[in-house]
Amino acid sequence: MTPPSGRTEALISPERLRAWLALLRAPGVGSGVLRPLLDQDSDPRHWFASPPPGTPERLERYLRRPDWRAADADLKWFADGPNRHLVTIDHPDYPPLLRETPDPPVALFALGTLEALQLPQIAMVGSRNPTAGGRRTAHEFAHEFASRGLAITSGLALGIDGASHQGALDAHAPTIAVSATGLDRVYPARHRDMAHQISEQQGVLVSEFPLGTSPRPGLFPRRNRIISGLAVGTLVVEAAARSGSLITARQALEQGREVFAIPGSIHNPLARGCHALIRDGAKLVERAQDVLDELAALLGGLVPEPPSPNSVAASTTESNPEHQQLLDAMGFDPVSIDELTMRLNESAEAIASTLLLLELEGHVSSGAGGLFTRQGNPPS
Image (cartoon, rainbow, N blue to C red; front, side):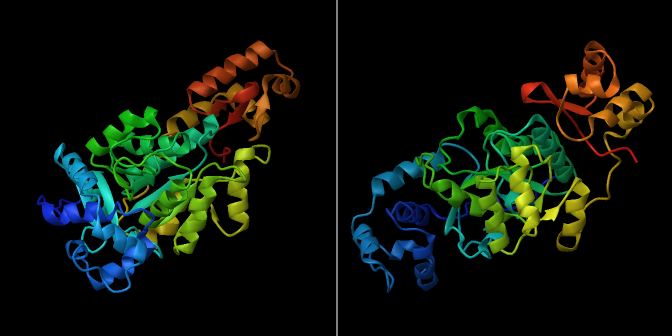
């Protein structure tokens, strides 16, 4: 999937960019304050000489003595590399779905292929400490979405976010990473290589926060509203009962977007957040196609459903009675080898050997405490 070709000229003149960068560094002034003022005068160059009517006193004081030194340092960052942009809310390239939300950022810092923001997007979020099965599910769903024409939007965090971005990257498709820091740093640091790959593979990193902004707890909920606001829907893969992913889902609902959740075992604490969302009206999904079917009317133009990549492995497993017998005995809750020996009356060594083969084929995942979980749908 390739983003639509776009303009190559600068989005904004150097003089206006400098004024915007100085304005965005006004302390304690958010988009809620700036938006009505921008409705009066969308060019902040004028503000430093004559603030718009209704400008709060704190902002007026800053406009009299703006931080030009920081703005000039920011300009150097923009000049130091390719594909660095500031997309202001009045510009045609600003993401249209995000502009429709109740609290859109007045500007987005962007690093990468800007046209990726115009693609139809699905947000994918979840636990920073997922199960092996949850990580695998996120990767597989993201890979299929990306292969079918959707860009994957997430927050570059560890766990489900990273697995979702990687699924899109492995499909050689664009993905959008929304940061809670300035774009001159990557958080978490271990995703530095992934961030570079995103920006180089027709994807884009975006943030509303000025350069140099470090990660702070209060910034992540603001980041989350951008993740949900960019997308036509949000899918929660695994989430505990009290999770930042649920904040993203709630913001998606407030923005009038679709919310989807993948159910899990009643014994898995990381399924409880998804179960709560489903009780509150989120759509239960078991396959990527479930999401695509719901969004088809909104998106249109998605390619037909491809053959299942697991169909050969599935038929191989079903043709082996011993493998199928073990899968049937497992059920779909985490289970230990000791429990399986009692259910099947076989030796632990034989069961462990079969589990290893099934794990290599992708039918079983191993987790904490020596427990194994079956992957995929039950045989028809």
